[in-house]
Length: 152
Length: 152
DNA sequence: ATTTAATTGAGATTGAATCTCAATTAATGA
DNA sequence: TCATTAATTGAGATTCAATCTCAATTAAAT
Image 1: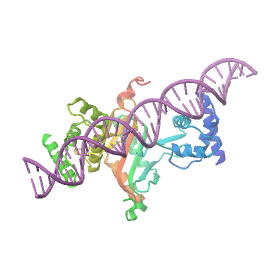
Image 2: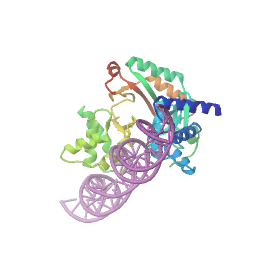
Image 3: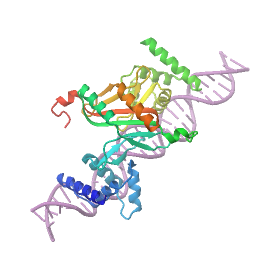
Image 4: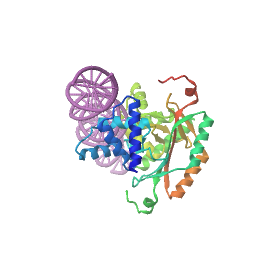
């Protein structure tokens, strides 16, 4: 677990060096915070966490660092149509898709090999080279169906 | 074709009446423009089209009318991660998914029944009641693969 | 220790989308 | 046809996420 993170951090460090980018305290802190974070956090989650700690990090730097991490594949940017982006730590996770409950906001992850293969096949048919797939199912989760109208 | 549109417009009119909303010239114009529009337009496409014509329609009104049309199911709102929404006329279209070329921006539509059924099955397994599915494949279209680096 | 190019942060800026509110107007019924 | 009323419009202000600017700072390499 902690070994895992150290490995990841050194992978990050190497990646930075490879591109002539510097390993700053801010980048280090952002990286390690992300590696410990829960799923699907947004930028403000980071901002406020740093705000509480002794040394704060500006939004600009956070955004810039996230861009790098997304480029390097450490982090995945996800968009659930909320008008802002969410992110997830990608390094220790297989690819997955999302079900989003429109009532409680809960996000469920699922993986389905057939779904994946279907998409690959479609890409072949269309002669399309995929770089990224998005599969999202919006609706009501099991709990919220049962409830008698929590929202409205 | 023109008959089709008249039907749609009267469906719209009825829907408005049902909710005590008024059929204004603006709404009528927005509706008919949309019914003739190409795929996947954005708000500014409408704004500029109206701007050129004698009677312009404010952004606020356009946004408000689009909300109504989306609610009523005449229009579908789609998000391709560009930082703004696109829309498509839904009335005369079966559901479909999208492939988005990251090079030329072209959007391809496809439908795959198996893909759809797979998702339904997953929803059953998770006891999830879906209201909306999003399947998007980002990548390079056939043409852009062939080209020797048009973008960068 | 010096040099240099990358980085940071504060604040300004952009751009989409929403909100406010006074003036206008569609729809209803007399 | 006209008056009444509640819905609608538009101009501009506002919000909010995200990006940009630029002077001051700092990591890294010699």
